[in-house]
Each structure stands twice: as structure tokens, then as C-alpha cells.
Amino acid sequence: MRIEVLLPAVALLMSGFVYNSLDSSQHGFVQSPKNSGGASPGMTGAPNESNCTQCHSGSVENGDTENILTILNGPTPVNTYTPGQQYNVNLIMASNPAKKGFQATALTASNNMAGGFTGQAGNTSINGGVKKYANHTSLSNTSATAPLWTWTWTAPAAGSGPITFYVATNKTNNNGNNNGDVIYLSQHVIQEESNSNVSEGTEQSIQLVQITSDYVRFKIPDEIDQVNGVAIFNSTGEMISFSPYIKVNNGELTINRDVKLTHGIYFVSMSVNRILYTERIYIQ
Image (cartoon, rainbow, N blue to C red; front, side, top):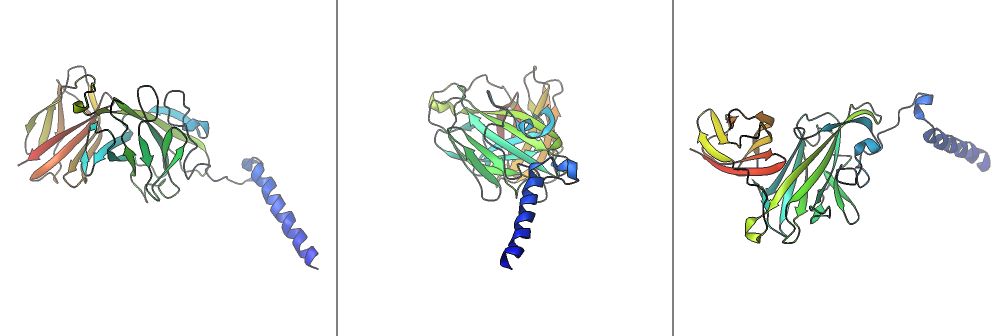
């Protein structure tokens, strides 16, 4: 009698394995997304790497205005790093899709891993071998539960020079499958601090020129026609205002003042030709 009960159960389990191994569309079933807990290593679009279209049948787009990456020392955004120091890395998608994912790595100019990553429980996970990769988790791939991803970056040793963060994000159509998604690839460069006797590369020549009750204005090099990921943070690290991009007119960048910009110290963070830039401002 026991054998008669077990045999149908075993048969049912086996049939379940068969259906899972077949193309679910042939049977009216929809498979769950494969990478809800993060992608396999090497999907950031970095040199000699693939990207998320390895598993998601979608298009690849320029992510300069979609992927907004900020590196913070405590609450303060920075555009240079101190070797060996720990920083928080924040990543948001400007469009804030209902379903989303990401993978990021940080490499030196010779494409070696730059420092180390530490994930945040429930928000980001880290995988990989010699090269480390930050990924979304199954709890942080919806805008409702986590509007941004954050993890810890331990900067590399002195002499590593400029570090490039390679980022791939996935703007999914939330159809429960892996087709029709949009993959955004971007690069974000942070320089080594100048007192480490390492060249910081070309000066951006960005200058704060005016703060009024209506706007904050910067002088921008003539060859630059757009600045991406413009964000203003208060002294506690809260983002006060954000624009995916702002056009430069006649060599000037004008940021409209948010009503929250009252008296105090603020930090303006932006990406200029993929190089991170931060300016400390004081509102009277």
C-alpha cells in the first residue's frame, strides 16, 4: 500500500522536471526570470566582458543618462579617492523602472580589479573571482522596495591611478520572462587624489560662478555640451535634487534651485565626459 502511494508522487515530480526542462511557451507556462538574485560574473560591458543580453534578449543602449553612480565618503560625494579608504557607492536608474537589475565592477586602466567590494544585506550581493562584481538581489530589483543600490568600495593601493566603474543595468518590461528588456551600459571614472603624486588626467576647468535664489551656475569648458547625473546632496548625504542630464548653454551649466535648498552647505555631484565631479557650495 505504501508503494502505491509513493509511485504516483514520484511520477508527478518527474513530470514536473520534464516540463521545466522544455520550452515553457509550448505548454502555456511562463518561466520566472533567471537572474532575480543577480547575474553571473562578467556582464558589465567592461573590456573583454559580455553584458546582460547574454541572458536577456533585449537591446543595448548608452547608459550615460540612465545609470547614475555616486561615490561617497560618509555623506559627502567625492570625485577623488584616497588609496585604501572605504567609500559607499550608490547607483540609481534615472527612469526608476518597476523591475530592474544591475551589475558593476571597478577596474584600473590595465583592466585589473581596483580594490574590493562589500555588499549590503538584502540590497546588493558580490560575486566573482579575481574580479569582483556588485549585483542586485531578489529583494532590490523592484523600485517599490529599493529605489537605489548601495555597496562598499575599498579603494586600491596608491599608484593605481584613475579607476573606471563599469555598470550594466537592466530595465525590464516585467513580463515574467527574459525578452524585450533594455540594457544600459555606462562608465564612471574617479581619479586618485593628487597628493598621492599620481596624475589626475585632464583638468575639467569647472568653476562655480553664481548662486542666486533661483539657480546655481557653473562655468563649463566650451567643448562640453551636456552634463549627466546632476545631483545635489545636503550635509547629511540626502539627495535634494536630481536631473539625469542638463544641457550646457554658452559654456554655462544652470541648475535650478530646489525649494529644499535653504541655508547651509551642499554638494553638487555630476558626470562630465564620464568623469565624476563634485563641488561644495554654501547657500546663504
